[in-house]
Length: 145
Image (tube, rainbow, N blue to C red; front, side, top):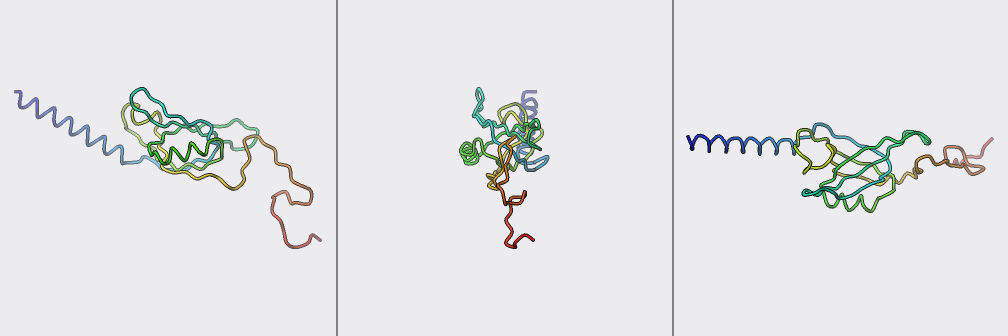
């Protein structure tokens, strides 16, 4: 009886470990999000994780949508801390099936990012076009007729 119970407990522990490993390495989806990094902090009672908030604005003057995410990689977290307040592009993996909050507050785990250097403006900002420049901001080498 005791031997059967011990085998059952060990089998359950092995199954739990196997499923946890599977869900940690399997991604339900992967993708990219762009926006302004407006909040990034390390939090948690026992399991400390980096949690962030990206403000995504489709058009200036409209309400921003917030994308909440988690970061586990210390190097990525340090880079994001330095990019606070800037427009960034996040690469993430969505993990489904992870139990509890020790893995993070969200299902979206950032695996990389890049700072947007295209000269994006801050949300809601108006860009004035200097006289003589086309509205697109590009310069043409041919004279206007």
